[in-house]
Length: 89
Image 1 (cartoon, one colour):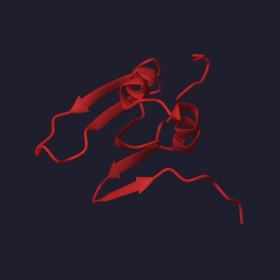
Image 2 (cartoon, rainbow, N blue to C red; image 1 turned 60 degrees about the vertical axis):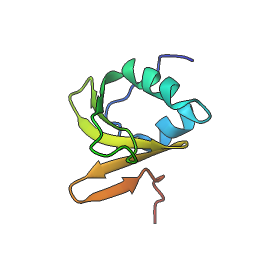
Image 3 (cartoon, rainbow, N blue to C red; image 1 turned 45 degrees about the horizontal axis):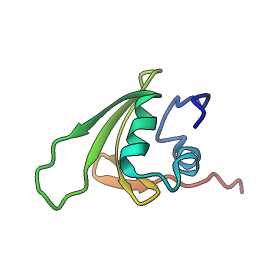
Image 4 (cartoon, rainbow, N blue to C red; image 1 turned 135 degrees about the vertical axis):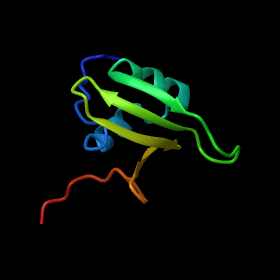
């Protein structure tokens, strides 16, 4: 897989990253992301919770997310959200 994709802000590029990583195992997705910034697993507080990760891009922008199949689910203050394509009105 080519390494020419630049991740400047994972949460705003979520749709493109999901498309690029579709079909890969979670470990492969994390390995790809580690080539594009700093990623760390966040310790789980309960065994049945999904594994969450903290990602910091090379531009210094951070986000927290977990992986659900081929979707990145981002975690914000008191919310979770999925990456959605921009549709102009």
